[in-house]
Image 1 (cartoon, rainbow, N blue to C red):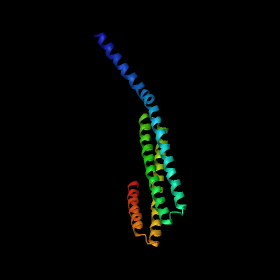
Image 2: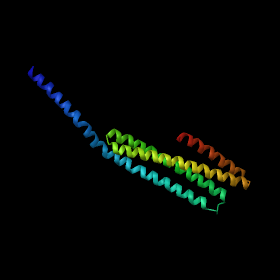
Image 3: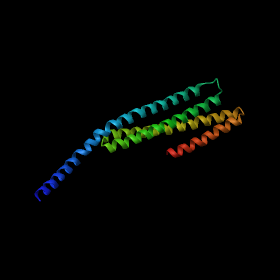
Image 4: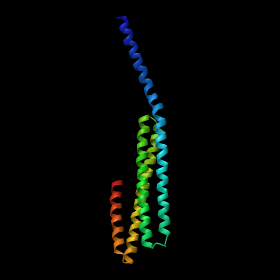
Length: 167
């Protein structure tokens, strides 16, 4: 009977010790993987989005294609930048959840801040895309390019729909 109590007491001690140690062990094992996954993807996504924004600005200033075509192309680049910012935002949000699960609340808050910031960038660039397409519509109207005007109007509608989903 005494041996049984000893084993029961020993098992309770082991359980208590495991409960104290387990969260730290999980954090030690999981934390490096979170930072590898999180730190690798987000900056790359954000850099790609910034590259699309830069291309859009260059196209807006280009006159060799015609103003309407340049504005339409700039709108396309801005829409692509928006999609890339949205991808970065989703990755940051996922990282925030992983950091929070691992117990690293400082990194979780920073990742959530980055998710919110990149989501705002996605909204901003999508609004800029809509504006570029609207200006292209005006140019196409003035030059009587109705097929191009119709294409730009369809892009405006699609981008407005995407913007509503981001809100």
